[in-house]
Image (cartoon, rainbow over all chains, first blue to last red):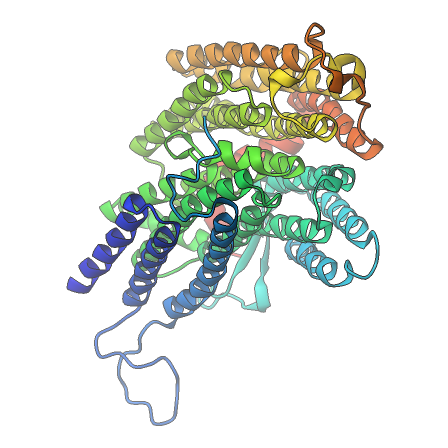
Length: 112
Length: 513
């Protein structure tokens, strides 16, 4: 149970980072932390105590096997997360070139 | 017949791939390929709707058959509700691709534009036909990554800032969605939507399921820009190129946000009264507040974007009322009427809001501004744009012969019949304010002769393909009101409503195949 609580705390840390930081790069890091907490959660729900890796071999001992599906899901989600994060970083670099700052308070061309 | 299902996803993906490679060497390749592919998809989706056979088509990816009636592998499910959404997506994609042929000369890099548009359509089609929760998440991400890039397509200050806002909020939404998918998997040990529906049907309503429902409403509400989560929409939709604004406002917030909410809450979860009230309440909130935010805007596309929030509210209260009636075990005929009104308004909004954004793009193409104060007297200079935008304005504010009137009428009649008088009164009230704000648009942009500036005197109407898209949509604004005629309604709207109403059929049919 304690791992799930730690996982949730990690989620809140990420959310706190997004909501309070003024720097674009820090916001992106906060978003990443939030996503990583969800990946951890996905791996945890597939875990079984004393479980083996889900690879069937000849000398396999008759023990419970962890659920492989969440692991596949996490792999996919990490790849997608990489794509979104690199997109976000590209936009951040472009923003820096236009505004000469990473401060979100000074990037205010849109209003209303 | 069931081999056509994967083509909705494969064709645009293949087109994106080909355009990004070959478009560099062959001039005009991107335009022709994108137009041709979208036209094919359009024909495919209309073929399913009008084939007269409203059975559900299931396609197992990789040919994995169920073992002991437990589905393994990913299912693609095409039923009338998906078919209905596919028609909207592909029609709008085709018309905005045609429109962009001339319009894209305002920007550079048309190959990238068409590649991203194809990827976006592939993702949207995937969201609509998939029957697997995690697969839905993957297609959702494909859609939104393409739309992030398209919002930032101009790479000016405003576009970049809007895209950044959109990406951060979209990232939070994605995290919430992935988290609740994980929770649902933990509870049910499956990802297949019909299978989950079967398991949730047997087990009593639990706290964990309610938690998942709230997370999903927050996540998809952010994608659909319902009122408390709407912050990114006016920036993103007004900064994108106009043909993309038409796609974003007309299609993406519906297919990636509302469609998924309706599908999951009607067909996967058990309907509960509390959740139905919550959905209807946020719908009402966005309907009322959206229109008040819209009326003070002077930036044309921003005004239209706020109206998108407000009009989505109509769709949500229509379907939400149906949910409330069904959850209360009320009269099924009223529930059916309310849901039908909501879905009818959904297709209507795609058409007229798409048209209005294309008009805004046409004005921007000739004048180079979106500020209503700098326009005036365009009625004589741009007759086609003026006439089509008048049509769309009348449709969105509910003037009788146009489609917007009929869908709002159906929603209001359903609200009165089901004794939700406050909702009916609010719907009428918001419609009047919508009319006021579109009178403002018409007056300042087209009929204001006094303030004709020098720049306005030299404008001509836009090129043929842009006119063509706008005229087709304007004709659709009139023609769609014919959907309410019983014969046509039974082909297009009623099967989609039946899919949402008949919760149990959804999983029983699919698992016994």
